[in-house]
Length: 395
Image (cartoon, rainbow, N blue to C red; front, top):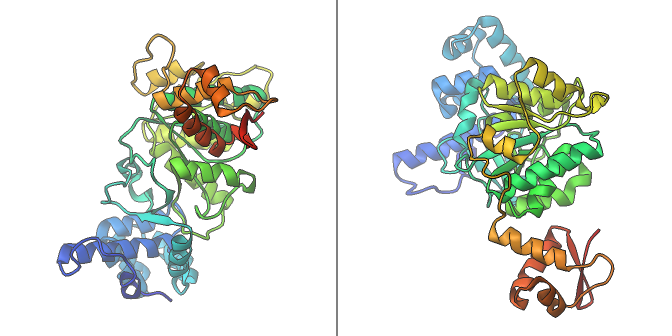
């Protein structure tokens, strides 16, 4: 079993190690990592105890095998709830989950964020006792910590071509306007939203139900690498943890809490995306829903949101901008200079005949240096490929 003191010794210095405030920060960080390995996502009792005692003192209390009466008094909860918590925590108390997760995190360049860090997304604090003790983050260069406007775009895994098209259009427009696109990296709507945000040169974040060192689904391994390269892949469970049905449902509350609004593009009547919308509603976040054909079962859930949950009807990016308080403008969203350059280069490429850089520069009206820079980015995004000394667009 990894003790708190053992883990504190592994924590990197966050300032003058001899000062008491920084020593407390190291201890708090270590304790939250231990809690992350002990609790299942959304565990209210653990959250209440951490809130009442602080992460380190709460952990030392649990390490000492408290009685249900003591835990109930410390966390201000009922005795039966405390007894159930002790019983579900017991099998994990002797594990080395935290230590092993840190070893995996070091190998995969995964950072740990805790409340109080500059990059901690304060919006997650709205979850109260259900907030995660820490976050595991891979990438992070695009991590905005809630300072930039953000929208969750979610929907069915078994999406239709209509749903994926609409998700891509909305995501691309938002990303080009500087809005962070957040989703869950699943097949269908999630994947379409992430890919469109990347293609527009914007920032996108993926919240996973398992450890962020594990690509899930495996078919999105390359997509997750691209997300981490310019944005962030985030999880509340430690590295190495497997995704489970419960963790998927609980992951949805993070997507809803971390964003300014949630837009459901397509959802069946029992879709997990409705769970995300429910979390958003409980937190007072706006909900948008994209209507679909009345005959489509893939849109039955979005129609239910419009009919029963006061969701805003979303037909395009301007509706979403208005939903989060941005001026919808004249119906168009101007891409950033970088995104505009990539669009011009992509338009100048053929998906059949490869062209030299000089030819692409002439066709796009740009300098050879700028074209080379954009071609490199387009290649990383999977939108262009080199053939000998020439370039073509990937279909």
